[in-house]
Image (cartoon, helix red, strand yellow):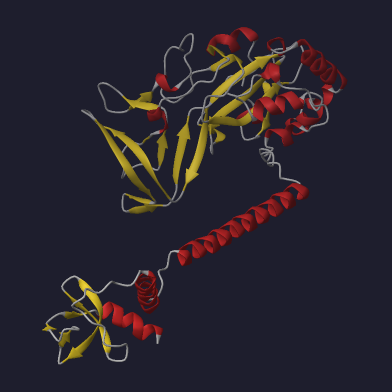
Length: 399
């Protein structure tokens, strides 16, 4: 392939990409020719109007300043420069850097090394670095002569789209594996557009530019082979790693690390999140003791309440029935004996304590002689009265 000059390399420049682009939801749907006649599918496509067939959906790309002419479906639109951020849902899948200072030679692919002639579809000029952004889970690849992103799936359920002459057909539960021409297809190859972003030293801070220049001038000969690329840029890969591995961070905000291998940092797994702090043992012991003291206090209050409540209830319990009766009778008898004796009228004669019982004739009460349930006074008169049971009970109690 002919080495491009800086002029021809810029023909496919789509413009800058310095903010995070978020593709529309439909851009992740997979377009296939038909559910029973294809083994590959393509993202970021739309049905032609009029159909049939698909073409690139430009809404799935970061807004370019211009489009190439003619616009071929799924053959790459171009690259972005300065490009500092991969789109949302994309990650850095491959990278490259120019190998000769001051010359417009093609870039050398650092990871992976599966590109023809070790270069991007849209070559770099001297002083440039580039990243191939692919959807998460996809890898950099070439389809015919055009760069793309690839992922193979063998057991999954996905949403696909097919196009015919009149309408777009959506299938939300397409199963893999599937059958094509009576043959079982166990693997579906999914393709997605690669977003190539380039940046030059002038796009970053001056301190980083000086470090890169010093590192490249000290070991320029060692970077002509792609396998030795990491030793050439080991002094600047701290920033390059941060840009490639976490491409959503602006390059100007990344610190420089001079002891990191470029290839290692490109594929480095994400760091574990910081562990949450734990309470010191003394604090844990204090909390435990405090909890026990609170529990004991509550239990003590409960026991005290039960004790006082029991005493209160006992104080309200009435005396037994016989005690009440005895107390009442005692009170009445006390009242009866403490009362002054009745003065009997002249017509009632007290015949003696041995025979006399307390009876009441009219309003007069006193001991009289009982004859067959009648009362006899001193004149020998007999009258009908009633017995003073209360006084009798008092006498019986006293005896």
